[in-house]
Amino acid sequence: MTVEWSTNVGLIMIVCNILAIAIGKLNIQQQGVGPGLPGGPFFGGMGAAELLATTSLGHIIGAGVILGLSSTGAL
Image 1 (tube, one colour):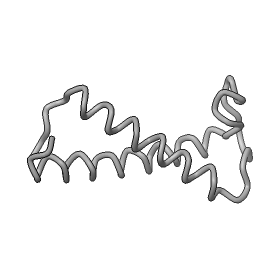
Image 2 (image 1 turned 180 degrees about the vertical axis):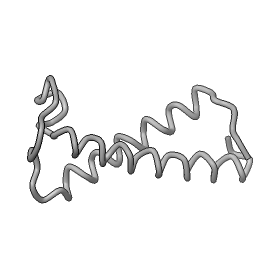
Image 3 (image 1 turned 120 degrees about the vertical axis):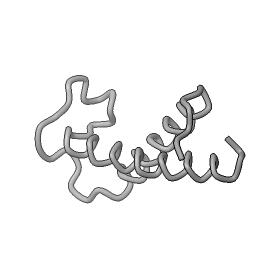
C-alpha cells in the first residue's frame, strides 16, 4: 500500500529524522571521526558518516510510522 505525499507525510518524516539524529547524538561513542560536513557547527559537529547513518535510521523509522498510520486510517 502506498501513501500519496502530503504535508503531513513530510512533517512526519522530518520529525522522525530529528528524533533519529537526537538518538544518534546521544549514543554515538566516537563523534566527529571521519570527514566533516560543510557548516559543521550547524550539524552539531557531526561527521558525514554520522549524519548519513542517523538520517538513514530516521527514514526507516519514518517509513514505518507513515505506513502504520496509513494502515490504521489515521493518515
